[in-house]
Length: 80
Image (tube, rainbow, N blue to C red; front, side):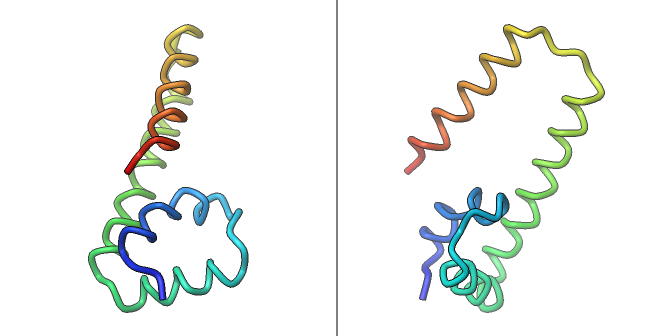
């Protein structure tokens, strides 16, 4: 069974669809029994969607976009 910490660690890969079927199933079972994690998942999805919409509607200088992408990738990989 997956714990909440593991759930958060796997969330990005889950939404990208890159988890194995076994891990994906375990994660979905965790969501069924953990209202805080499903709430976090829904908030994460909404925030991601809002960011994508904003970035596609607003012109961002190339340097800022590259810096932002680099920051996000670095912090996702280094998050606790």
